Each structure stands twice: as structure tokens, then as C-alpha cells.
Image (cartoon, rainbow, N blue to C red; front, side):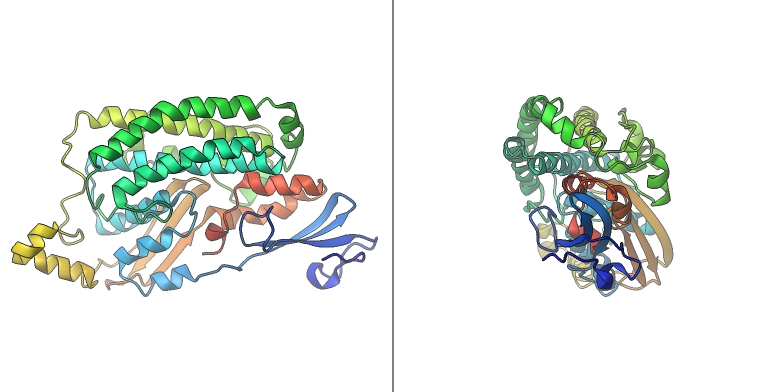
Length: 407
């Protein structure tokens, strides 16, 4: 595992001349929270150099997507950031809707906001509680994890799945929300704010937690912008940028919410930004519920029969519905020629989808902009010179998800 001399093969011939230790952080290590590797050269407890290795779970999603009908690609996006699958699903659907020129009803937009903000909460609660685990505080992780399960139960009522959700369709949702789903959502909104406050009291002003996090893994605004960092990691560095505000989608312009911004960009700031974002997500969900009261409760998708599976009862009794069902399932609906880029504010930052269509049943070219893959490039720079233990919690606070890193 360790070599007391410089590791010239992995780190290059210009490696440090003094005696150092080379260790493997990963690819399967409890502190990495995913299948990726960092070859680290350390001098005692001090990190001198880091060489990231990626690609362990590369699954060629983009090339697979270019061989699939458009509607079958949603399931691939589940496997990007699997802590917030619904945001990936809806982000892809919005990109295809932009290509198709589909305008969704307001009720669909607000339902999507509810789902995406629930996903943001589950992502951030995992990230922040894992920072606690890596600093020696396991209790908070165990406590908040039950609320992730409550959100998964809501997903299950809406689409039948929990983790890899495949939620929604082009133009909206595959079915309307059930009464059970609304009831479970109400229960979550009653219990979650109290739990978040308790987690806040347990962690945020804890002296040990603060001493471990403050000053660890700092990322300046200049560094963040140079590396094209987005999301909570960018905002923690002091840059006020959020796709929901800069380029609103799903009617986010109809809502009032604050964008939390940090100052130092260290582990503690990243933690604080995500804590406040969870509160803002709760507010967005409540605002959505208020707006839904004035809308027709029967609407859950746009009127686009050529891209949307008809009701099963209609398939059995109406020829037109049967034809649409066959053409959609068999991928016989051609998509217009065009080139689009569409992005959403994923839990880790700007999640973008670039599509080139030649008018066929599958994308001619498809590219996913995964936030993790982009901001992971900054990791060696921000841990250099710091303690090895700080490198662990920096990895946690950046919320690196291997599935999003290696599409």
C-alpha cells in the first residue's frame, strides 16, 4: 500500500526529492463514498501532491444514448447522481421538450418543482450528514436518513420506484399524483423542518465539528470560476450563480427564494450553503402547493399525443390510441432535426444536456454535462498542502458522486 520513496510512475519524474509516502485513497475505500481513486503523496500528515484517477465505473452512457430512442434515455440519467435521480430525469425531459417545442402546463411545472426540490433535500442531507460521519459524528447521519426514506416513499407512490426513479415523461408525468402521495408529502413537511433544526443544533455550532471543517479545503472564487465549478461548491466560494435564477425553467421565475452564498469556500461554508438550500427547497415546495390550489387538478401532462403514451383503456378500445402506443413504444416517432443545450440546477450544480438530432429515432450526438466531473479537477489544487484528514472531508463536502463523475 505504501512506498517510503517518491512514486515516479504514478506522479511523474518531477516528483518530490525528499522521502515521502505514496498511498492509494481508493478506488474502494470507505472514505471515498464511491469507486474512484486518488494517488496521494504525503509528507507525514501533509498532502504534497494528488493524482486523481477516474473511469472505474465508466458506462458509456452518451454512446448508449445515441443508440436508444429518446424516451428510453431517461433511465440512463437515473445512474448519474443517484442521490437526486428525479432532477436528472426532469433535466433530460426538459432538454428533449426544448428540441420538440413542447410547452408544459403550469401545473406540470409546479409538480416538477416539488419533485426536484425533494430530490435536492435528499441529496444535501446525505452530503452534510456524511461530512459529519467523516469528522466522527455518526448520530446525525443515522437520524436524518429516515427522512430520505420518507421522500423515497413519495417517489414510490408517484412512479413506483425509489432510488433510480425514471420519473416523468416528455410533457409531464406518466400518471397523476395519488392521494397517498399528497398525504405522505404533507407528513414529510410537518416532520422534516423540526428534524433539520435538530440536525442543525447537533452539528453547526459543535466546537469539534467547526474546528475540523473551518479552513479545510478552501476554494476561492477565482479558482472556482477557472475550473467551471457550479452549484453549492461555487456559491460557497462567494459566487452568486444558480441556474434556477440565471436561466429559469419549470416556472422557477414564479417563486421567491434566496440563494445562499458563502465567503471562504471551505468545508464549513459548503456545509452551511447546503443547510440553507434545504430550507429554501422546503419553502419552494410549500409555495408550489399554494399555487396548485388554483389549478385544474386533473392536468399532469401536456397535450402531445405523439410523444405521450395514451391511457391503457384507450389503447384497448380506440384505433388511434393503439397506433400511438405502438409507435411510441417501438421508437417509431421521429424527432425534429435540431441542436439544443438545456440545463437545470442539479444538486451538485449545472447539469446540462447537449443534443444533436438528425431527425431520426435516436440522438445523432448526445453529451451530458455532469457537475462532478468538472469540479473534481479542482480537488488536487484545494487539498495540496493541507492535512490528509482534511483531504477526506474535502472530498465529502464537494459531494463527489462516482456515478455522475463517470458517465
